[in-house]
Length: 216
Image 1 (cartoon, one colour):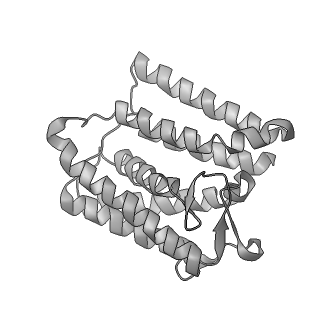
Image 2: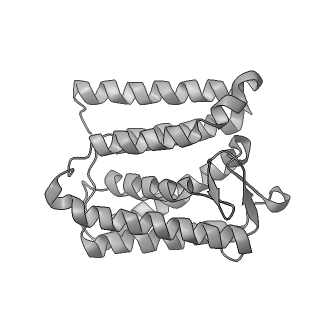
């Protein structure tokens, strides 16, 4: 069991408080629209917090990781652009205004979402022995599980919505394929992510989406 130091405990509590305020804000009709436009800020803040608590945040290891996560951002964004404009990959869906600025109907922030998810799921399993099961399969399955929950809350947060409000199976299949590709590339490139607040943040984010779905 992980023992957190006082600084980490304080940060985890702060993150939990921020997301709790978000749940309340999304649940009140009067403030819901305001909190819809805060989603990009929260995602960006989450990445900054993760970076500050990254154990391998050193100049020696950063170059390879910057290259890898730049690939994740670019590929994630371009695949989403292809998917939303054709319906070929994930199914028929469209983005709302919840994720901010869009290019060709695709929020630029969706690339950042892929980065955060790959990073979090990578860091969560970083303490296990390095092998394809722990570094590719388990993180990829966790990403699919995350998407299953996220999909329930996304329309309520005006992130995206599906044609006829039906989430196609191919969406989860495609998420799984991309997750495996990203984590396999990370494994081959020997990019290591270790972050002690990754698991608490991941759990808090999941609870946030669950409550947004249940309370709206």
